Length: 174
Image (cartoon, rainbow, N blue to C red; front, side):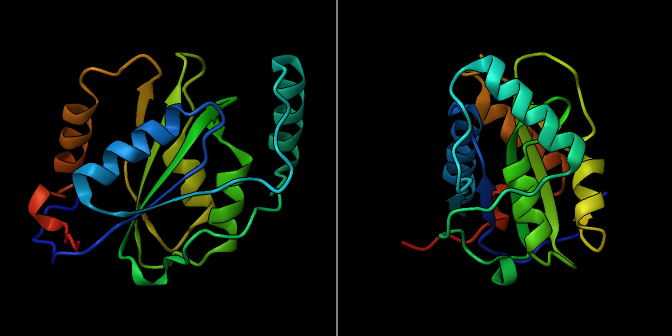
């Protein structure tokens, strides 16, 4: 477990969200940490109808498809810590986040995965990200159920502290 003193830094918060729940978590992380937040979007949007979405997602996950992403996400090279967020799709990370992780070298970085879910199948986000980023220090994932609005700040602060990241670890500019 990471408990040593951490120099102050500005983290990168990268997230994909289908319905907005994961972005809500990312926004709260940005408030707490002062980090730079980037949303990622697939080149081709996902279907809005749930049966079509589920069929496509299952096929993409089975085939380990990495969709093309729209440009605009920050490169991770300048960030020692990366928060990586996604909805829980079929017990794993959504293909757009998998694509971003696959495309970027995160060697030596601390990755803190977070995800939103509806209470379905619990996956192994930490393991799934560790497979995509084998030379990174991937920490325990935090799952937030979609209706957990009132205590989100406290849940996130506890998760940060559990990972040795205190509020004074983050640098703020602006």
